[in-house]
Structures are given as structure tokens and as C-alpha cells.
Image (cartoon, rainbow, N blue to C red; front, side, top):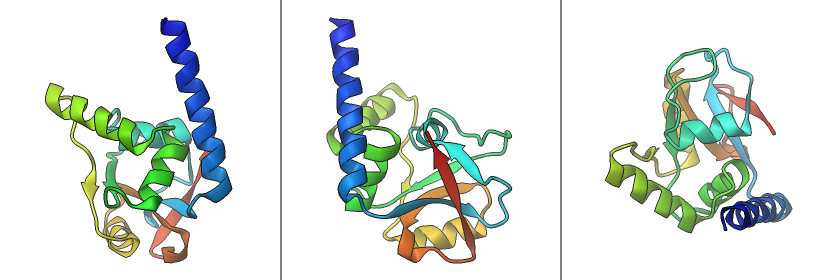
Length: 144
């Protein structure tokens, strides 16, 4: 049974990734222009946004910022990076909060608001609409 569930999760993740690539909003994962990072693996990004890690690979603090619940950009981000639907994310955070193991990232109203906070703090990481990118932040290369 566990193997079947594992295979079903893998198939769901692959379907989400492929469907996300076909019609996904154009998002970029950003850090401050003062942050030394240039790239992260998708699993490292997911770990930060899922409160499984509070640090960047070099050991510096990492603080994730989210866009509003239900926004297409947020849904595409989590489908692509963490292979999770909005329903799976809701279940995940319900369990994390209930067990005291983590809190969801702070939500901001827009890509512009996220960009401004990230630009001012090298510890922050967010995803924004690619059209909101400017020189105050750096788009990270997210590899598989």
C-alpha cells in the first residue's frame, strides 16, 4: 500500500510539473541583490518555503515570503517547486501548525510588495511575477 501511495504521489508530482510548465504563470524566485546566492535546487527552495529549513545552503538565515492564498502565481509556484496542489498545501500547513512544527510564510499582497521586502533584507526569499523583476533583487536559477 505504501508503495502504491508513493507511486501515486510521484505521478501527481510529474503531472503537476508538466501541467505547470505548459500554462504556468511566469514566476521567478528572488533574493536581495546583496545576497551571494545565484542558484538553488528546487528541493532546497521547497524546504525553505515548507518550513523544513530556515537556512540557505551556506548557513545564512532564510525567511520565505508568500503571495496571497488562491493566487495563480502561488499555485503555480508550489506545483512546480514542491509538487503540491493548493489542497495538499492546506493539509500540510494544517498539520504543521497543529503539531507545532512550523508556521506558513508571511503573506504579502503582491509581487511588488514581496520584491520591496526582499530587496531590503538579504535573508528573505520570495517568488514574484517575472514582469515585477528589477535591479533591487536577483532572480535565482532554480535547478532540478
